[in-house]
Length: 114
Image (tube, rainbow, N blue to C red; front, side, top):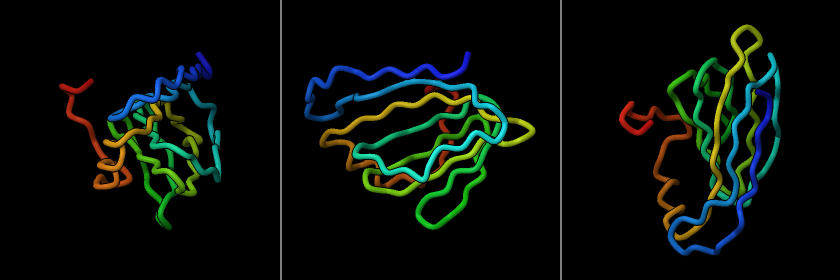
């Protein structure tokens, strides 16, 4: 499948304003970053695993977990060499995006959400 990336029309919605979404089947060792975003970005790992680096920490992320990138944060993420991840993502801004600062950088989502 490779990379599928969609920029959304910025509708300037006030609460949650989706800006970008996509998914990627990463090659072994595929790396993104270091990079800084202007919006909140959540990646959900559908299968495989990798390493997410943010806030001076290194996190091992596996299928069923998500990782959170906050605006202005320097982050890097790398697919595992043996079991590279397939993830999907959504980037957004808006007044409610501030609430995501309360989340840990890596978290699990209940099966009922998916």
